[in-house]
Image 1 (spheres, rainbow, N blue to C red):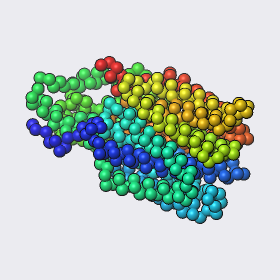
Image 2 (image 1 turned 180 degrees about the vertical axis):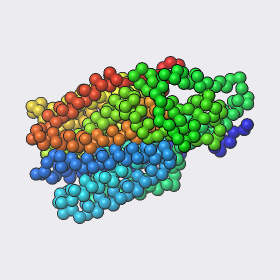
Image 3 (image 1 turned 90 degrees about the vertical axis):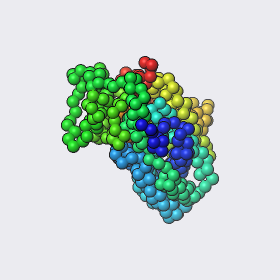
Image 4 (image 1 turned 90 degrees about the horizontal axis):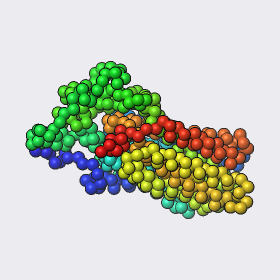
Length: 513
């Protein structure tokens, strides 16, 4: 049987060059939108003297909770309806965000916008959370889909690092702009992102089907192999795939679903693995099946099943959820309280921009290095532990800015060095965790599982905004105590990762080859 080359789908950079250019462009626009909004809001918050730290960091709370909830919705929608539709909806939220921010800033009495508009900025960040959650999350999904299972962490690393590099550069651009001009930039970038997404980008669901072995290209390839090399085509029997019945935890009946969407959970010691079953002959798995019809579509598991698998049954993914929350809790500290406190120390706008961009630059650089390292060596755990230990060191240096050491080393230098070290630590783990979740999840459920992971991870923005603000209020603005508490929490997390995390399916598989 001849293959239809027009329907052929291939993983990798060479065969998808134009689409990857679109995705990189989208990542740049996402990063610009994020920094043009949050950096200005941090400066506006610091200008609100006489109000509590909790109120000043509230802009991160509305942003974080909305982004977290958006990730769950967009993750499930991406598995069911494809990636492109929710991505475009995210840019619509961005257009609303830009228009609202520009309108609010125009109504301010001065360039700092320090009148009664702060509550509106908090409300506007609901749309920022939706825009970031829907566009950035789906962009990462599509990167992972296109580059294939061998480059999961790298795919996430490229999308995130490009976004954060553009975010860091934007910090310096907006220091030369007024508040109104910065928010107009948000509007322009959102319109540009919407146009690129609707006109240029293609949905990547076909790559998911290829990975699961049910795309037309993979099916025709299997047919060709069967016709020309029938002796080389091996089928895995149900007995080989399922092993003993007692090794499984039975799940709820899937009434009304095709048999090929069914799945079970196989127990490995204290962990569980989701196993997808094909309906081609009840004797063939999705992986390596030669009997899948080209028109068959792999259906994702129920949301409840993926939720339980990710949050409870698998200790490795469960600890990753907590690690994700802690990651953005630290980021919330760097975006919020650090910049607010820095301005209270009479640092200039340019110095504050240096502190902010130092964290972001180092974070972006380490994303590529760490994600590529973990993919190449097929291991995640050493990178995770090393990254969080590095972040702890950076937090300690940052806390010293509010100690007697600041009499010897300037506050600015301590915050700058601390930001660089924290960024290196956070960048090391940021994309590796998304790759780790993918390692533990079947391809047809990947977007849902990553959406659940990002619910936890991006809740860290909100939890961090609330926690750091409350601690600063409780300890009368003590920056050193607030930062020390966060450092202790990271230390506990490192112990949990060392004890409970195990390498995922992909890493273990390649180590054995």
